[in-house]
Length: 237
Image 1: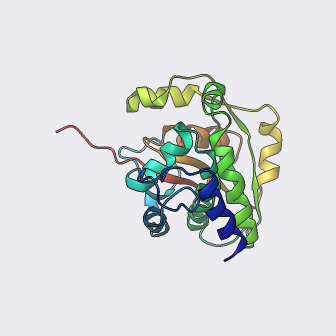
Image 2 (image 1 turned 120 degrees about the vertical axis):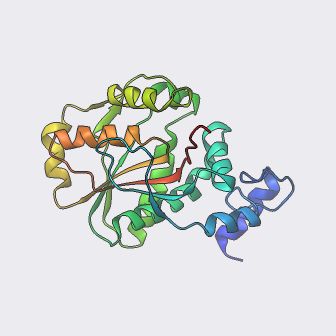
């Protein structure tokens, strides 16, 4: 048994928990999920997604899968139920999405969608940062020259879960600001790099489009967006 497998097995014995994907109790867990849910997640393959209607300026988006099933449950367990240990396996999955979005190893800058201070307090930290760090480690281990830039900060805004598409677009447009030093420095920092905005979930695409516009205003082109899950929006009957 490899060391990481042994540690995972010992963790299951000392800190038993339900599967984050199906909530089954008593099953041996690897990275917080049972074997069945691990197989489902492992079977997902990144592909292009596009909200409809897509907001103006939205870059090409790649997602690991739809916001449903085991992927949805794992994200909810991670973000809303305090299962912070899931950040590492989710980061490894995000690395696959980034690789698919960029397509070939080249210098790449990841720009995480920033979280509000209120959300960070509620989740005991920046949930996306905990995902991006292992994603960067995995990409670098595979030979990708990847760095992270945080040129944008989040301003207080309403919870997007409570807003419709128009409300999300309005909140996103007013919800982000460039950091002062970014305007002059960022174009030089990202020159020759693929610029990828990363997030956990895309629904309307408003946040990603708003950040892409801010970066474009300081002469930085966003090449792609990489997310773990894409919400399937259903129109009214």
